[in-house]
Image 1 (cartoon, helix red, strand yellow):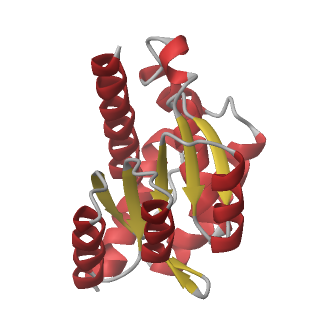
Image 2 (spheres, helix red, strand yellow):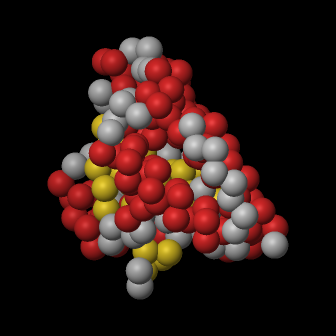
Image 3 (tube, one colour):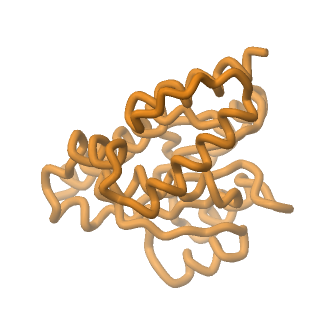
Length: 199
């Protein structure tokens, strides 16, 4: 019941931006409506919600933001699209990986400043990604976004911190859009701060 109420509350907040006045009574209503709004938003980047979100979080310094390369590691297409849309609006240069293998390939081809990480990537775990990065000496800031239970999320965060990764935030699925936006903004600010300190 708590999970369902949380889901419904999330879309009711979204309706404030999309202008939807529909009354959502079940989690199934939420999922159908959320997928519809995401698809419409992706097809129409000037939609009311995305325009409001982007205008209120416009990058202050494009030169700095151009350096912030984010890899989204997420095997669910809808969640990956949502994260990408918010990250792009905040000024990140985004790449996507829907599998462990594609993430490893991208790490070999590009250098990323940070990642968002699902803890379950098909038959692999997010910890495997961190172990790979640790092995190759690439310790970059991490934003965990996962539907795992609280104990598993906490265990993963502790494991990552033991490998000296900076865990900026742990965002729970189903996604709370405001929490996601705030977490990505904190990730951006953290990287900007450390980039400025290195100059």
